[in-house]
Image 1 (cartoon, rainbow, N blue to C red):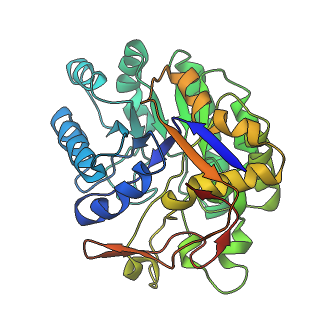
Image 2 (image 1 turned 90 degrees about the horizontal axis):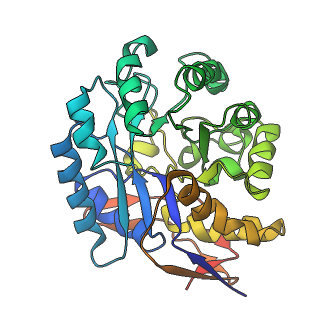
Length: 333
């Protein structure tokens, strides 16, 4: 069986920089027509000049592939003039609570400090993307943050707010409470629970933030994706780290899924008889919600087994993907 996807998009992607980006960027541009690129580098991508320079490095790394990088800027206090300039360059502004995840130490410490910038963003129609976690107990961090989403959605009703990489049934329910809320969900959170990460031998290459949750949470996310919820989109949150940072006592958070994302999604939707909903999940919903017009490109997949490499290597870097060494039932052709 052959499946054609038109201009698939990854609405949440980490490409890092330097040699790591040279390795991983082509693994995304081989599958996707575009992606929303996260800004949490060191230092973060937080002004117009940095956005332009990073975009060019992404394009250089992707070579001749037809690929549109939708850039983001790291949330800070911006003036109206600064946001006016950024609006021409970015898809949205990414808000991290300070210290919530990789390279987020310069994030927002108190939401009240963000209000002036959020007001300007609302007037300029610049989307807000949020890593929505508190600093509470690790399994409760997303749930504790949902009231922040409620407050933002209520006080900024014309601001499009994307709840990034949601992991809980409660977040799925919240998606239906406010029309200005949207969400992305990752491949791993559609497939695994915390038991897969730490129920037996610890599997560091499945450790990410937000951490995988309970079976009922995974089921709610999966049903929302399979049913074609119009404000739920695929965002891989593919986050490469070198092996020495993953297979370590201080394991870095992030699952590298870029090279297997579309084949694994095809297998999942096929398993549930929902292949007709995959186009919306990986492109249609995002295009309708944000008015995107990605490069015209057709990506073809086949229901034929693929052996996932143990690692991807190049430019002095080595990264282990999800499902390393396993056989999956679909492949890119």
